[in-house]
Amino acid sequence: MHRYQTARWMHRLAGLLVFLVTLSAGLYAQQLESRDREAQRRIQLVSLGASLRSALTHELSSVLYLSSGLRSYLTVRHASLAPDETRRILEHLYGSARHVRNFSVSVGVTVRYVYPMKGNERALGLHYPDSPAQWPQVQQVRDTGEPLLVGPLPLVQGGVGMIYRVPVQVDGEFWGLVSTVIDVPSLLEDAIAGIAMRDVEIAIRGRDGRGLRGDVFYGSEAMYQRSDAVLTDVDVPGGKWVIAMAERPAGRLASLRGIGWRVLIFVIAVALGLAATVILGQRAQLLHMAWRDMLTGLPNRQLIEDRIQLGLARHRRNTTTLFAVLFIDLDGFKRVNDRLGHKAGDALLKQAAERLQAAVRATDLVGRWGGDEFVVVLDGGERGFIDAAVDRVRAALDLQVQLDGQPYHVGASIGVGRIPEDGRSVAAVVRAADMRMYGDKAVRKQESVQQAGGRESRLE
Image (tube, rainbow, N blue to C red; front, side, top):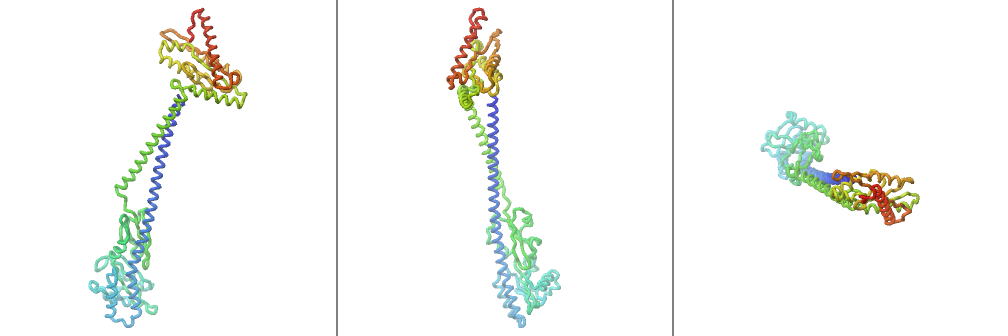
């Protein structure tokens, strides 16, 4: 029974192991799926970032090339520059441009031409050194000879714009400046409109082309603190912008979906763990019932015969091996069973089983053959160990039972079957032990009659 209880705990442990393995595998699979989804998301964001960069570059280029064309015109016509002709050129460029608020042309560092004039009257005649807000950028363009994109910044005439300043050089010397004011909301709207941004947040930083050091001019500053944001650089004249893209925070439904999957994995793991425990327990119980006596928990006849068969096979391999079978019948059991009832008889059989196990070695097999008959399989040992085992068994089963206040003696009749003397088969060895057990019972009965003074023996 101890082994059976141990097996039950092993089955529970196996069920727990199945639960843990299933739970771990399920959570790991969910983690892998989450990582795969994250990788796919980042690939999508990188692709969207590249598309947005291309769109922004295209929209900017569509504006900036006009300034380059105007610079070429001024470089060629600077000596014979006519106001009407210049105004017509600016009008033509403005009519074909997108996202342009106005053009201005300065000769030296003073604005001489503006188009359209309406709303920009104050810009005409502006001397840049007198404007602290604009002079540093103009001075940089003049000194470096490189175009510069400034902003986005609030415009005096309203709205938000960027100013693209292109130096005009004649014979390697600074002649003047072309300034193009770009409408930022219009440019960004057209660039972003072509990108599928349904579940994506966008931010752009890099005011005045300063990259990550510049201010954010579109979207939220917090985007650049998110670990899941994908950053994309956009080259602009005089510097760069940095686009940040990330998925919109998961809503309540998405969060509940993730919790639901984990709960489902847990439930499946519990179900599989319980199923494994029940199945293994039932299997062990069936095996126990097939190989064990249900009353005493001892090996039954089938298991005893298998153990004897193993002993025979081992003896064939090594003939020096000592092997014997003790066939035991309880004397006086029938009287106890009849007088006290089956419960008392069952209790006696259990007590006999315990005493038998305590009387032999741990390597010996103690089994119940049936009824009040037991078998002990003695496998190996020194010569003389069989007789010693018989003595121990007989002493262990020498019991006194109280019946209606009267003591009743219970003992054991024992027969020994030896290998190879009594045969080389299970049936032969058991038959020899059984016959000797009846011979022993007859001798004990005769002795009991003599001790009782010729009265009928109570030995049964």
